[in-house]
Length: 517
Image (cartoon, rainbow, N blue to C red; front, side, top):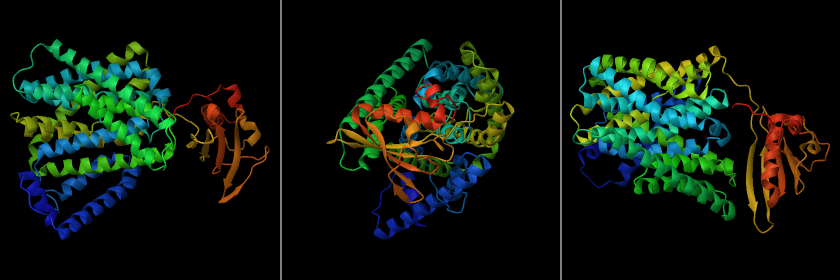
């Protein structure tokens, strides 16, 4: 079939002219793969399995041992596409990370992403060397590769579980931060010659992280400032601009010899907490791009693996994965979080929630591209490890959270979209009241919006009307709130506070009660 021959040409680096007929075939196959992947999300959400396993399965089914018979072995192309997809996934994750949840636990997350990675690399590499018999270079590469928690897996699984905000914030921030030091370590271990002067390597890691963090925050702040002060002619341009700014942060960080991955995550976090116009549309656009990036990346990784070669690597993968999951991860969590007085229940959950996904598999292509001896074995071991332990950890996380009594009962947050009215020096806020919001049953007058803001229209069951002060708001209502520019932020804060605290929001603080997700 054409797709198979195209993959072979990509693998071997040869080029042939593509006809319109071939392009139509390729588009049809890609569309079918996307539709199957979208349908598979529902299966994975019901079973509790991270969707990455389904996408990997699609790639394997299309591969050389599957129905598609596509022979693809271009590790360099996979690495490039994987890096691009990871940038988009980190951007989407950063846009959805709430600063109020991350800020209290930021030092602990940074400790997990730095000291925790060092502990995990040491323990896992020792297990790979002494228990499996890998030489030290291969053992260190595997230890570094699997020490990064996967942003895509963590974001997709944790946001379905109502955990306390501190736990969710720490795990999401860790997964966003630890890619950077791990990439540096894998590249260093895969380079020619031994790694000398470990303190120099540590200094380089810290310098790259500092450069990436500074550039990420600066680009995010400048981008948010620009988007808040420039009214674009179409609402659809805001999501494009936000993603372009986030990707520019990655490029700027990498070109400045800093950590581009940390830069894109921090820039996206700044943008995601900046109250930008048309925010729900931006989040929807970013989420869609994130799904496409995950699907494409996992399917490509599934194509790259040769299932018939995995049999000899199952036992080494299980041994190394057991050392990582039972020893290295819990030890790094205890050593890093105990000084911050994190309760043992939360430490237990964080130890089990160190999910691995596509990131370790992508990083395992680095030694393959560098031509490291035994790199194919490293890749196969990492692939089996990720699949097996994701099958074990993903579905059991909700059960463990219930056993540890870490569920969080929180009110659903409001969906608020802002459209700037530049010539009128005001903003039009579109407020959607979800099913779990405590704004249900509140009268318009009880919102107590600041002077300069007012509810001008209510849409209920497809019918719009101008509300009275005594109009009672209901779940499912959509409100149009007009606010002058000086009180726009105060009006949104007040709306969100009432959404979380109901009529008592005024006694529970300006921002409402503090709850988890």
